[in-house]
Image (cartoon, rainbow, N blue to C red; front, side, top):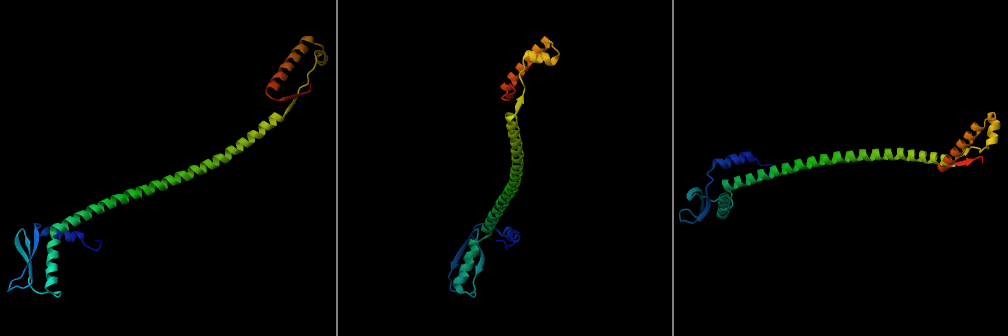
Length: 186
């Protein structure tokens, strides 16, 4: 119905009596092959002359006019208008969904890019951390264990100082070993 001026058709149909339309054929001696349309039981339109298609064509056209009366035309126009409104609403929803999907796709792509960047960064951090841990675990501390006599000789013969140094040294060796570091020099 896109090439039909629906508004002009509506205006024309609204100007016509929209009562009950009916079609009736008649064969009278003075009017052979005639037909007429009744509106609300009253004669309204006559078809008396033979058109190009003959009596049968004339009657078919008159029957069609009676069947496709203004009430039917208005009902079809109303239905068409409702369908157009529903189509417009569905199109609006489809456009909104398309825009939402485009926005969601853009957000997903941005999130995936951020995840890839963060993955690369943290893989580097983990690799650096693993390397540092390996370095620390492989590290050996050279902390020689000395006797009190050796420390006294190195410190100027202070026995209290030498005993304190040796006890501190023993504690340091114990704690370093507890941390998993190899102590060398014993």
